[in-house]
Length: 261
Image (cartoon, rainbow, N blue to C red; front, side):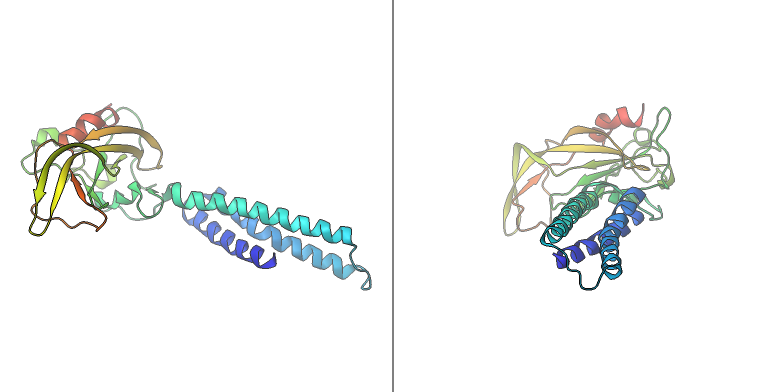
């Protein structure tokens, strides 16, 4: 039991540090208290034992109460550690990263760990436009900044849609594509040593406030229907199909209610 409690104390200290560094003082204080509670209990028990008669041994009833108290403490710590694990993996964390380019907002979509929010980003308030950094999803699971294609009409990109004309300091929103579902079959792409089927991508796109990480909505976005096969592509061994990507105009059509209103 003592080893378990020591292990839980170590986890509580770790999550407390994550809480303060991740911009959640409540989590930091909570786990600091969780880590301190068993230490305070053992210190109290030691002082009480030292102050009592040296020849007095605890009765069986007292031992049972102490055992149950330790079990309750351990159970409470397990519950708190479970919440800490959920927060570390799923709740957005503060990023202290300087914003030099739109790609710095990529962590706002998550990845191996929880997504980030950016206190130094512009506040999402008032009527539009609300500048947005948009990130697409490759078939290998990596994210890419969505830029307007070469020759795309400048009048349609403005200075608040994702692209080189948008200053990072003005970004209010982050739009993130999820991994695609499989739409209708488009074509078979032939490569030097293999072939892969190309399907129309069906995507879920989430919209977040860049400054707070608050989720504003979720929309459906479709890939194109043209049978455009890449000349070269690097995929994980587990990937055995390709998906078409949405056009820049498709992002604008779906997200304009968040950006322009």
